[in-house]
Amino acid sequence: MTPVEKAEKAFTELHGQAPKAIWSAPGRVNLIGEHTDYNNGFVAPFALPHRAAVAASPRTDGVLTVSTLGDDGQLQTADPVVIAELTPGRISGWAAYPAGVAWALQEHGVELSGADLVVSGNVPTGAGLSSSHALECATALALLGLAGREVDQPGSPTRPEIARLVQRTENEFVGAMTGLLDQTASLCCVAGHVLFLDVRSGESEQVPFNADAAGLEVLVIDTRAKHSLVESGYGDRRRGCERAAELLGLESLRDVEDLDGSLARLPEELRPLVRHVVTENARVLSVVAKLKAGRLDEIGPELTASHVSLRDDYQVSCLELDVAVDAALAAGALGARMIGGGFGGSAIALVRAGDRAAVEQAALDAYAARSLTPPRLFVGVPSPGAGRDE
Ligand code: GAF
Image (cartoon, rainbow, N blue to C red; front, side):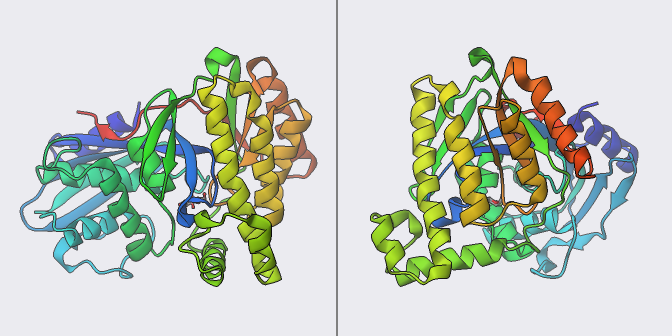
């Protein structure tokens, strides 16, 4: 059963009647452009087929109830909350994501009469594939839909506006100082494309990405080393970038023009952060140019250079990610890199379709040789963004 079917069934069993409607949103792979979003730079993600689905019906008493279907098929129900009484910091764990979305929408002036939500999803959690953003985006569309502001209809917030509301949920309610990459990917990606987003201007472009036609595949390697953006060094990196921009008298690191000259003006410890952000933005532009020119088979070196920069300059990789990337490259991948915030989570490898089995085996062998938990492996196919299902 799909997450949509599971959410519908679980809702009907729990509430004794079918939900009013179901909305769902995907996780993402970021092809390139890591730790650039909160520096006003460029990103190029695509949506995964893995989704979070939210079955929902309205209530009239201002209360929000949320239940989630675990991997074991058991429903977990959070304590009901009165939406008007929500304040940041009072809810922790998974329930903070849907509650935080209700809070952010209310702060934005959306009138919410209350809702019953039942969630089911198959985006691997803690895998750096944006499972929490998938849940938040599906919840946002559900609560907006119940409030008569169905996504893409006149008078409703636009998808980029919804992404900003979801970012507010993360930053202010959940307490993770994330940028705009994940929620924009979940809301704005379309099948068969990567989304080239300029975070500073908000402008975006759908760039065709048909690996299949080029005889290639994007292998996703979920290291199963769990990462958490709230607890990791993510916030430190972000503050380091902001400090560097301030010292350079710039609004953000996006505005660095003379890299060497800028590095010379900064304290030693901030230089690698700046070098990563500036070179990563250049790699995004290079990859997008190659994709537009139909040279998908030539983007491998940028992917690998991104990993090296994240590992050595930004220092957000870890043993499991490095082992996966090194094994993939040694087995013939055209390029490979960690994706997402880092400190665990997933890597991707661009492989010739005929080489995939060998690359997968190499990753499994490398993990076994180090007694690491075997990685989860699957092919990432650019899939549709968030929407209403039924
Ligand atoms: C996480 C964050 F949520 C994104 O905003 C982004 O910064 C990413 O890490 C790193 O590129 O996924």
